[in-house]
Structures are given as C-alpha cells and as structure tokens.
Image (cartoon, rainbow, N blue to C red; front, side, top):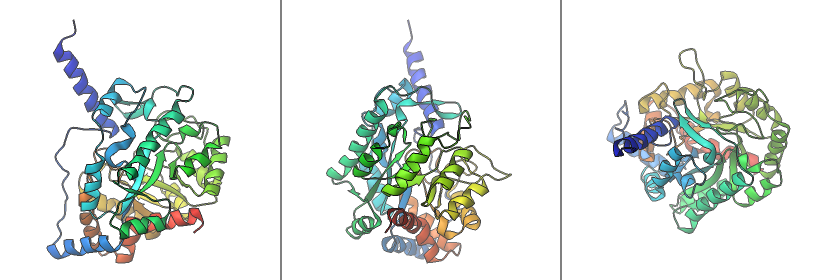
Length: 379
C-alpha cells in the first residue's frame, strides 16, 4: 500500500520541480528592490506611465494558457489544477500603470515536463493535438475580451485607443508555432484570430527549427520555417526568435524582410553565460533588422530589481535605446525579480533616476514595441 505521506510528498516534489521551469512556486518572499525613490520621483514615474503607454512584449498574465489543458503529464496537470488568475493579473496591471501586454498561449504546453534542468518536451504531438491545443488556448484568450477584462488590440492604434479609455490592451501571441505543423494556410486563420506575434520555437524542436535548450539538432531554420517567415512578413505578424538556437535565430534574421525581435533574453558575457541568453553578435543583428531585445527579469545572475535595471542598461549600451523593450515573461518566469506589474513605477523611476531621458524610457516601456508592430504591419 502506498502511504499518504508518499503521495503527498510526491505531489509536493512535483510542484517544487515546476518551479525550475518557471511555471510555479510557492509564494516566495518578494525579491529585494535594491534602490529607493523619493516621493517626488515616484509621483513622476506614475505620471509618466499615464502619459506613455507601457506594453510588455512577452507575458502570460493570469496563465490563461493552462485552462482546459489536455493530455498533460501529472506534474503539469497539478499546475493546471491550480487554475488561472486573470482578474488579479489585470488588477496588478492597472495598479502598476500598464497599458497592456502581449498575452501568450504556449503551443507546446501539452508536451512539456519539468525536470532538474527546467522544462523540456518529452514526447511528440498526436495527430491534430497541436491545432486543438491552439484553438483552446486562443479562444480562452479571446474570451477575456468578452468578459470585459481586456480589449484585444490588433495594431498600435487600438493599443492607444484602449489606453485612452483606461482599458488594458491585450495583443494576442503564441509561444511556439507547433500548431502550424506543415500547413502554411493556417497562418491566415491565426491572423484572423487576432494573433500579431508568434515565437517560432519554444521547448520543442518543431517543424520550423531548433531550440536553444536541449539537444542541438543543427538543422537551423527548416524549409518550412523559411516559408513561415515569409508568410508572417506578408501577413503582418511579428516574428519572435526567442528560444531558437543560435543557428536558427541567425537564419530567421537573414530570411526576414521585416524586423525580428527576441522578446525575453539577455546577452552572454564572460561573467555570466546561460543557454537562454544570446551572443552579442545575435543581439546586434536583431537591432540591425530594426527589431529589439526584450529585457528579461529572470533570476539568472540577478536577485534584485536593481539587477534588472542594470540588465536593461547593459542592453541599451550594446544595441541602443531604439532596440530594447520590456519582456517580463510575467506569470511564467523563472525566479522573477519583477514579479508583479505593481512595481512598474519603480522600474520607470529607477531609469529616470539614473539619468535616462524621458524619450528613451518611453521607447523602452512601449514605444519600441509599437514601432516594430507598425513597421511589420506596414503602417
């Protein structure tokens, strides 16, 4: 007979392992801020956010992607059973002065399993499974507008209109393009659903290319991947090369006639290297394409919000203020040092306190995202 202690212990261990993938952890102590703002500096930051729309270029507010998840391994099924919290996430966005975010589904969620080194895809999709998972996730995201929680924005004009009305703008995105399989015609259906950004690859080596974590297949961008890049350019969907292997990402940039972005990462340095970080050469090529790198507040090499401000400055120093944006990975991040949107005034205040111009800060919090969105859409 299996004892209750063993069952409970197994569940707790499984949930603890999920933390390694960034998808869940027991309520931790909030990370240290590491700096202070005067009342005047805080008031200035709050006013600045009211005047300048802040858009997170990569997020999962409230973890909508877990809702109705099917065919999950037992660890992720526990995570699914913990439910979603969109109302809390939107309340945090309102309190923190956000104007909106890219609300992402997770295409390969059914395949994932947490392990000692984070998340990995441990099986392949069954026939029709990837498209069914996409439809479930995207319809649940669309339902957030029907519940009057957000306004779905398909372009920068709609973002600004929602901001003027005091509504949170949700730009629909998908992390992983697995649902396309080998059917390029699905791009039109995805565009019609309102999706305006796709991360081509997540934790699964799919039909487009290779991931940066796990076994290096050395395929690079596949023939179908090239077809999808051209199709996304034509449709006006922003290409996100986050999670792609170095070879795949470099080929995405070369193949694209439009700006390419990497929404949540950082640069590898002699002092700090990580598989999810990118080379300075790749970062510069992203900037040369007209795109941006999303500063990622993951707890890799930093443990305070001040460390995240340092990270933003490192990127700005490398590629310039026109090519850095916010990519928080909110509500699915690994040990985040920016764990709630309520701290956005602190981020803005710290950047202003360090002497960054208001124009540069406005670009970082949302301007660069909207500029790229406009360019890709031909506005």
